[in-house]
Length: 468
Image 1 (cartoon, rainbow, N blue to C red):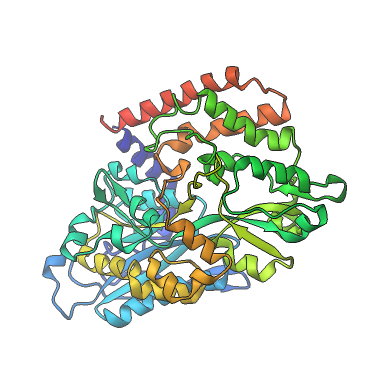
Image 2: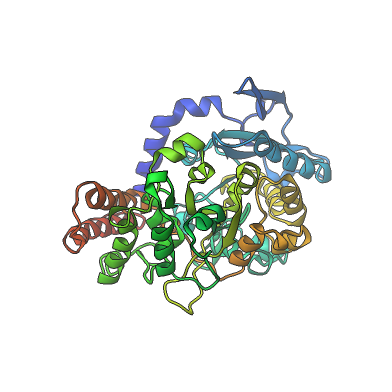
C-alpha cells in the first residue's frame, strides 16, 4: 500500500520531467535518445543521436543485434569537466569491447536525483543502470534487480573483490542488489602551521577524542581568526567519524531502532561532547568560511579538519600550507578507531528489457578494467584494493591513510542504514543543535527522549507500511 502511494505521488509531481528525459531502452524503435551532455558557456546542452533498438525481447536477440541501454549519473555544482567526461569515457570503453551494446549516458543535477529515478521507474521510463547512495534496505521497495544470480554464475565474490564498504553497502538480507562505483574514507588533516604557531604537538597515532579536544582548545586563537576545528553542524552526528567514535551508536546497525540508542545516558554525553566544542570550548570555525573559500580549510585558519578522497584533488591543488594526515581519534586509549568509509552504488532496474546486456555493463563498470580507468582519471577512487596498490597510492600521504581506513571492517553511515532515516531521524539533530547552541536548551536528558520516541514511532510506521 505504501509503495503504491509513493509511486502515484511521484508520477503526479514529475510527469513533466519524464517527457524531457525519456531516454530508456523500453521506448519504441526509431526514437531519438539522449546520449551526451556538453556545456556551452556553463550551460548543459543535450546532444541527441538516432539509434535503432534491437528486438523487444532479450530472448530474441541474435549475436549481431545492436541494442542501447541507458545509464543515468549525477553532477554537482563543484564537479569538474573531468567528472562529467569520465562517464562517457567509461561508456565508450565498454562499447569498444561490446560493439553490439550502445550506452546512452544522461547526467542530471544531484539534487532530487533519487526522485527523478523513481519517477522514471514508476512510469516505465527509468534508466537501465544508475548510481546512488541508498540504504541497502531500499531493496524492499521491489524495483531493484537481484544481482546475486549473476554474481554466482560469473564466479564474482564482492567480499573478495572490493573494500569491505563496497561489499556491505550493496547487500541486504543475504543478497546483493548493488555493486560499488568507488570507495572513499574520511581522514583527519592537521595544519602544521597552526600547530607550530601555538607551540602544540601534532596529533600522534593512537590519539583519542580527548586528545582531539585538548588540541583544539590549545590551537584556537579567535582574536586572530584561528579555529581548532571546522564548522560544527548536524553532519557530525550523521556522517562524521564521531557519529560512531564516541563510544556509542546513535541508532542500530540496521537503522530500525533509535530508542535504546540515541536516548541513553552515554549517547547524551556523546552529544554534549560534540555540542560543547562550539557552545563551551568555542573552538569551531564560523559558517562563513565555507561560503567564502568553498572549503573552510582552504582559509588556512583551521587546525584540524576532515577530508575524503572525494576532495583529494581539490585539496592538493588548492592547499598552500604544510599539513599532516592521521586516522580519526578513538574513544579510548588503546582502541582502534572505527573507520568512516563509503561507496556510491550501481543499481540495475528490475524492469530493464536487456538485463544481460545491462549486467555486462555493470560488471565492466565495477571490474578491474573500469577501476583502472577511474584511477587514471583522478575523479573517483576505485572500490578494488589492488588498483590502489598498482597505482602507488598506498605511499601517498593522504591516499595511503585513506587506503588504511578502507581496509578496516566497515560500518554503514548513520543516514545510509535505513531508507526512512531522513523522514524520521535526520531532522532530530537540527532541533537538538539549535536548542543547545542557539537557545541554551542544554538539558538533553529532558529534551532528547521525546524526540527519540517520535522518531522511533515514525520508523515503526514506515517499516510496517512495507508489509501492507
